Image (cartoon, rainbow, N blue to C red):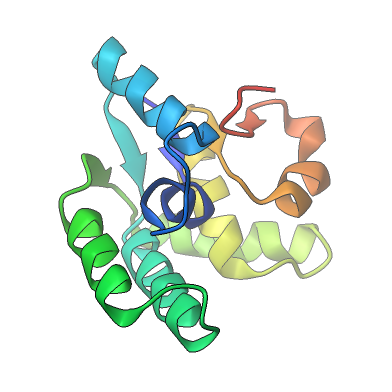
Length: 140
C-alpha cells in the first residue's frame, strides 16, 4: 500500500503530462497489483492548488484544469491521516531544518503505516534519502 504525495498526483493528472510519465506508470503498476494507494486529505487540496497555479502561470487552460480536477475527484486513493499524524509532521519538520510541515505530513503517514512514500519532489527525496522508504515514482 504505497503512500503518495501531491507531487506524484500532479504528475499523474496534469493536462500536459505524457502518457509515459513515471506517476502514470506507478499508478498502473499499483492498480495491476491490486495495491491500495494511501494519502492524507491534504493531497486533494495541494493538487487542486497546483492545477490553479498552472492556469495562473499559463501552463494550461482553465478548461484543462477543470478536466484534471475531475480526475482528481475520481482517484483511487484512500485518505488516512489522523491528528497524531499532524503532530508528528510538525516534529519531523523541526527535526529536518524546519522543512514544510505539509510535506512532512506525507512522511508521517508513511512512517505510521510502515509503507513506502512516493514523491516526485526530488528535493524532499534527497533530504530524506537516508530513510530508504521514500522513493521516486520511477522506483529508484
